[in-house]
Length: 161
Image (cartoon, rainbow, N blue to C red; front, side, top):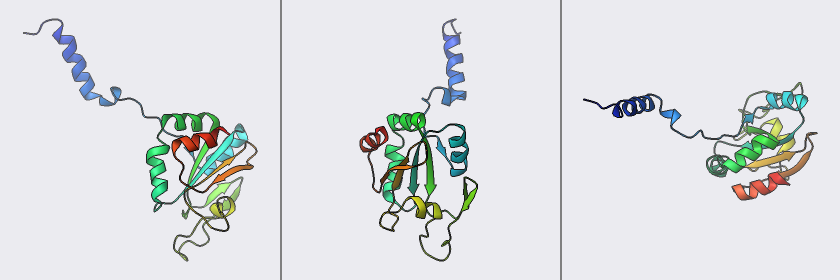
């Protein structure tokens, strides 16, 4: 026979087993936007912009996803002070920004073909080197370009400039 103190405990235990996510901490994530969403957001409320250009084959891009873009302080700063945009540099999607379409003109013609948006924003000496990150001011003017892996400490310094 159960005592009165055991019954509430059993009830709470059963509820926690049915809804395990209620016991887990909520993991913070960067609120990544698409370029389409960015145009609308900038029109509604100007804000600094952080753009991460990556590729699926880039080891350092994947490391940044796992190690840097999961750090709470990085997530908090990006979400609070920036519109954060991620873009696969080799995507074949048509991207509309400010009513203008951008495409990957070399898709299917060239291995590792990069998108027009990358050609416009993210090249160093005519080459795309992932990971590439760009910081823009609220007027969408480039403040800084980074063509390297950045650990969370280095990225936080760059974001606070």
